[in-house]
Length: 401
Image (cartoon, rainbow, N blue to C red):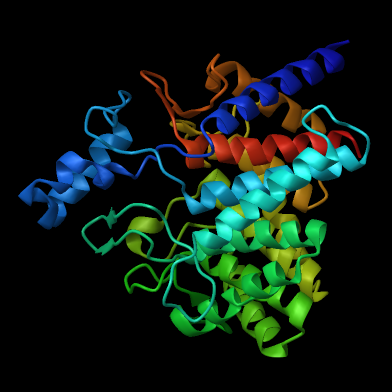
């Protein structure tokens, strides 16, 4: 009885989210899009790094959404579009199993084709291979300014995985060929920092954020996809070096810090999930299972340290708030990738139930963050809705296995 009640609740929640996102045509705002403000761009302050940083942080931290007032347009975000594509691919497989609750095979196939075309059209131009960036300028502390459409390995990896899933459904070889050129972007346009017996891929083509563990692993993930289809041994070897470095950086308890800069020493939930997903994907794509013990140890740490008894998802290993919507979303995706969904189904059910109760608007969209005090209930298309769309599509498919 309780299980059926949750099933209908999750289904209703997802239908509301799906309707909202489709009505918005997958365009929306983002926590970091403040510099897209037409008001700010008309001011001389735009040339000052501290002003840019303060402006972005003001938008990101404010529980009140000033974007409409300050003329920030709703736009496509490539990572968000990729997450929607991943989600629709899961729904297509669900329809193939006979569940048409979220669309028929024909309807979902058309969605997949349309979003695939859109995602390929959003590539950043002028790089060694297919690469994707974000639709806004981004001031990273005072270290450097990312101009909009500057490709990052993170955005590129999400796009690559989504397009590969699309190819497996449509069998459009042009999509596969265009997507796999992203390996050239990783090898030729990203820098590599030697570490131990391996190396760490940089976050982007810009220097200054070169030792972020999850970003490096996402570079390895891209290369592993290239190896799976093209069997270029160099791509498997270079991917392995990134996995080796990341596993050397895993602590004895199974945890990872975010990055190697002094200001990047925190441990958080969803980047832990990214790490595990990437290493597992590398293993699946290359057949090299020599890193399983690191996955097992990391998964145990992840599930033991980032979720409370009632399902509440913690942000940090030693601190709960602010609860970010990425946290409950990513654990579902990671559990599915690691084939751990059934083993931890009770935890995942509780976490999703808590998230629907505390972080979903009656309009269907999900909130950015939940805090002890005033929460940010702004609808962010990439950060909140696309992540939950993909997670809930994974959830429904797993429930029908």
